Image (tube, rainbow, N blue to C red; front, side):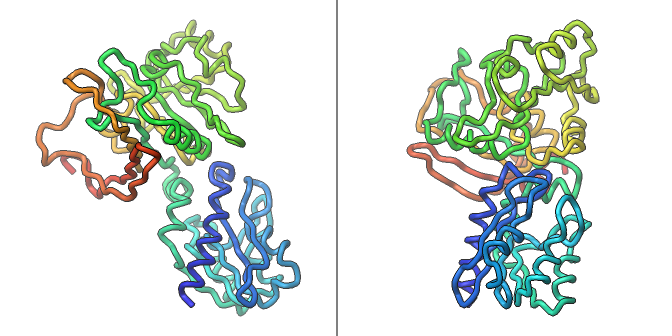
Length: 370
């Protein structure tokens, strides 16, 4: 029977993934209702402020929900927000059992939804495929627990770890399949972040160019306000805004960028540069849960040394530049000894045609000197 429960939860997870990037500040949630071994209702949370996954599934199941089993990736909510509590809807529908992937870390829920179900005589089983359920909501879990965004660093490299040739050419290192996946990552993020060096060198659009893709907030870390007012991210057609994080107070440059449509965000000064922790705290305060760092090397190096990266996505292309020229992933000073290296835990390895993607997380206490 355990295999059946896990199979139904995997189905709920597949539904939840459809909402990734569209539900913030809410989590992505999927729900499946089963009666007599057959699925009679399905749903997922599609957008913040709209009905939750359980409500969609209950509507599809109708009267068949009475006495049925419910599989939901996250504990049903127990409080009134923009929508009524899902725990109450399940009680009113008369379901028999609820299988929960993970307890909601939100202090407003955290066990209360399960308690409400159990108080109504509904059997609750929690922890089914919990690790998978936590994975799809990593940004929500971190943000609701700490107020800070979940930061993913993505980079495309040759097999020897070079991100560009000695002349600065980086188009294209990876293949079309990898690049298409990166656009999917952008669509699933609340914000995509680059340094001013990337803006000046590549003039990127930072949009999600996939069918139905949602453009994320574009964040440029530009300590001295060198972003041109003619940059493509300011002149293109996009529903998303462009935010420039800086420590500069140059009124003329600020006025020019604002007139071009940019928002200027002044951050704490750390050694003449934007303090990344302060920037991320400001982004978290405005509801940004997931940040995707895409470049360049100075920003990546600062983020690594500041210890703000939660996940690494390395795309390796079957190419070699050869020689010592070329740019590496991280700018700035490196550690002096191998024992001081930043240590990672490899989690997943995937192939995109000939390219290889390595997904890794920082090990505990991986910062030098910690």
